[in-house]
Length: 88
Image 1 (tube, rainbow, N blue to C red):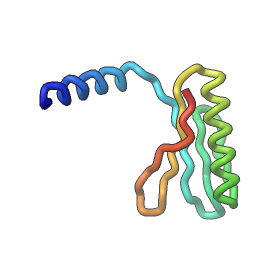
Image 2 (image 1 turned 45 degrees about the vertical axis):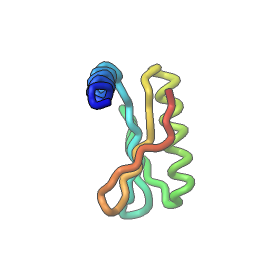
Image 3 (image 1 turned 90 degrees about the vertical axis):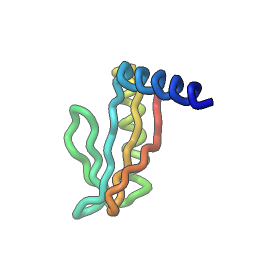
Image 4 (image 1 turned 120 degrees about the vertical axis):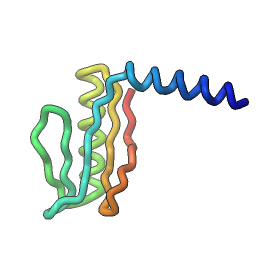
């Protein structure tokens, strides 16, 4: 059993090194939620559900344009990040 876990971990680590991911970040800001996407200007949206929708749409558009897997990373006030809105 231990050997299986080690092999699975090695395979997972190798796969993660080979896959390029593009992350759309969303974090609380002074005037609402700031959204950062690769090669785009920052966007600030006051309403959290709307900001999440915009971030997911940006991740989807980035995936369609690049073919790379994308996700939305929501950074919380406590400093933790939660990945959601996976594409690809």
